[in-house]
Length: 346
Image (cartoon, rainbow, N blue to C red; front, top):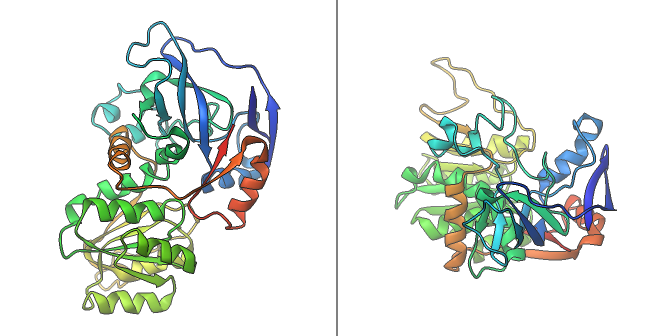
């Protein structure tokens, strides 16, 4: 079979490799589509700092069950599935409590949870081996277009689920960055809450798309947006800020528009820094602000996203590329030419 491999520092290659056979507790999935993510670019940018090479990339996968181990009883050949983002153990305390993106068996205190394409072989291939509990049925959804739900859907869903209690009628939510994650975040918020949604991006096309997907107000992501948000909230600021970019300018916007007792969720991996002191006269953050560095999501988050997609409440803007045009897809993503999600199709 063909597979896109991380062949060396910052280098990808399409290689021929053996079709994998499922072992105990595993299924083999015939891949229908594999989404590209800025996290994939991040791995390439790390160069020789990345710890291992030779693995298949891709952590957003969907397809059909093609073969199953004898001990797998809850899936059948032909089932349409997506591949869960976080391969948790299911039995540690964190997993039992529903915090499987903090699985203690699959990650360290500061390390990333076990994720296909960032450790185990990923989905940019014709086939992928998956632990059966992480091949999640999607019913009648198309597995190629549903593949990005596993990250582009799950990641904002997780951040939003942590602030659900704040999404009351009359609340204001600011979404910064309207690309692969942000355009789904707007749709989720519009589907599950009556809060006012203010969406920010530097790209006019993305702002227009956000307005079509339920944003109440769309603004260019700049200093003028800060004053507009404060004016729109009578000077109190936003109850929730979701930063899907994480570069310094967006971190600064989040800090400057959040309300007292508000919440900030930093999701983007842009490398920005939030500095503040805890002195009584500090003006860096209002009192009571809850800040979380959000990563990935849980099986429940994935279930929530699939349910919204099945009801037609969310959809992902996609552009497809044949698997052998992987480099063009990565180049287009790097250059900002992809609106929504690029998907490689074997």
